[in-house]
Length: 124
Image 1 (cartoon, one colour):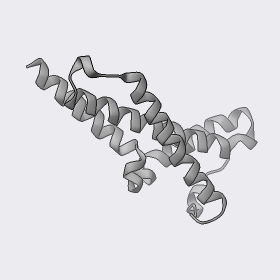
Image 2: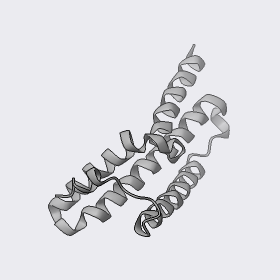
Image 3: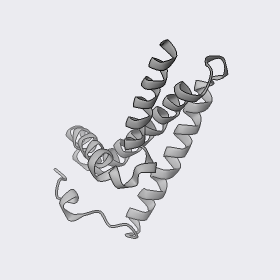
Image 4: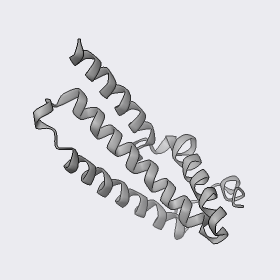
């Protein structure tokens, strides 16, 4: 019974992580961008010029959280307890999400990817 609950918990964590992760790029509009914009807006209270960097950092954090949640959920579902290495999983999640966020930021900066106007109008 405990094993089943562990697998169910892992599946739920993995599912939520997938929604936040870069693997579900189509959900950026519903999850990652709103989280990033709220984070950027909160950071802009400190200094108004920090909205864009705060938004990028918020986007990165939501992607890192998604990858890490997927990894921990998958470990709960598929790996025995004694084989788990959470530090390695965290480093892989951090590296992969950072690379993804850098690529997206560069594509937006060079106008290869366009940010919808209504999102840019949210800037305080």
